[in-house]
Length: 173
Image 1 (cartoon, rainbow, N blue to C red):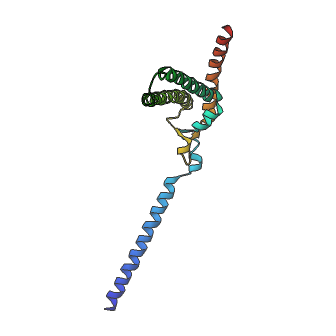
Image 2 (cartoon, rainbow, N blue to C red):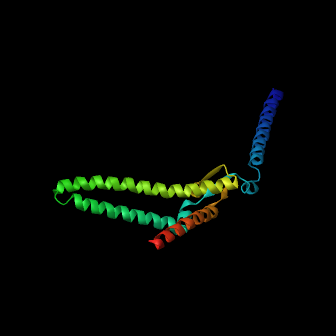
């Protein structure tokens, strides 16, 4: 009877030892699969870009956006004033709601145009650097190749010829 009790005790000890070895081996495999993340990040083919910083660093984009929004607002205000001269208050409210919806649609189109410029610069830089994926920096906790400065430079370079063209056109008038 003592021999069987000792045998059960040996089985429990063996089971605990086997479980311990299993847990240690799983932990070791997990650590090895993580690798050296510090040296892996710079060679990544994933890029990150801070779009807000790109827009802030390129005043031509933001000023272009503001000019287009102001022109649209002035045009819509003039249109509203002309159409609402002989209208009742209820008709003016309906016209205002319709024009506000039109303004929002134009605002979305202007914002899309600005975003398309930034996206084109991102795509250009990404293809030059051989990046297969570029995500917004705000969505990344760690890793990736930061291409924000390159995108900013690319946008500035593409805006310079456009500004020079606008300057010469306005001077020749």
